[in-house]
Length: 484
Ligand code: ZN
Image (cartoon, rainbow, N blue to C red):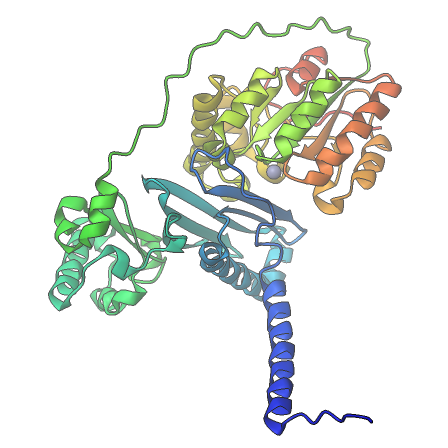
């Protein structure tokens, strides 16, 4: 006897609905995935960061039309990462639109647009951080545009802190804070004449839309460029001293951040490094491998391991933004006898910056590298290899030669170990400077074979400074190295 199973009508409907919802979800997921590119870091969150629970990732891109550099902190919690990703995506979209609009002008003037997103991190208490993100974009004309956004995150609670978590706001408190901000804006002579009171009012009207951050010393409010003032004032940051805002803080939160924050250890033992003064034969076959954009918590240690196995020396052009997070890693690179060069603080296209900003980008990074390694970086590599008279002046002033490259491994493009090997081996020549990046796992994959191939052809791997010395290069350069 055949038993027919009859499904009740409601069940069929539920099933259908579930199917449709599933389909829609797939589509939405697809779009979101596309819109956030590879922005959501897939790396495992590791613990070598000086900010426990937080890591940072710097992504750079270069095309004929533009350059882009995004430094973005991330955590192991998607809920925390998501709003940060969304803000970053929004900046990228606006940038793309801006480029489309000014493409003709860019092409005519032979300049490239640039987007730079950088982050400042402050620890408030154990696993509570303020992240201050700043996006600077220039898509045409002489003036760029700066946007700011801050996130206060509590990793104990795995969430972003909202206004209510930090403040206790009734109507009077809101008014008081609005007045504090307005007064502060007017007391700042540099910007007061550019400010529009109407725009300030509008910007402060809805507390949910305030852009704010908090530290044990201040509460800071942010305004984008043009939001409350003429463009000449730039993006505006208003810092209200803690003693003035403390009455409006949520008590529980105030207690938390009053916790004494331990100072970062600065008392690095002055270890003397007997510089490996290798005697180099001037007729030898030398090549300088260089690794940019790190240090990276997973890739850099792998690269160090491989270099050690082959007794090879290399040069690491580090970003200040990365070293700030991973100082002990930078120190390891130094201790292994490699050369550390400066790749600036935030990977901006220096040719688009005023001289004072160029200096800042270079010096800030130098200081962070010095603090981490005890050594001053000996070379400068401007991001994207982009240099002009102003950049050269800064390099000269700081007495750091500019080291470019003659062989681009294209590891940033191929992300493929075999391709990296082929690219380098078909272009390398004695005296080459090879560009690699210690942020891509595929580059770490490529290195054992690359070193073996180079050794087979009789190459010895040296630092860039050693190479320049051999070739008797003096002055700031820029130096490119030889190509095969
Ligand atoms: Zn770079």
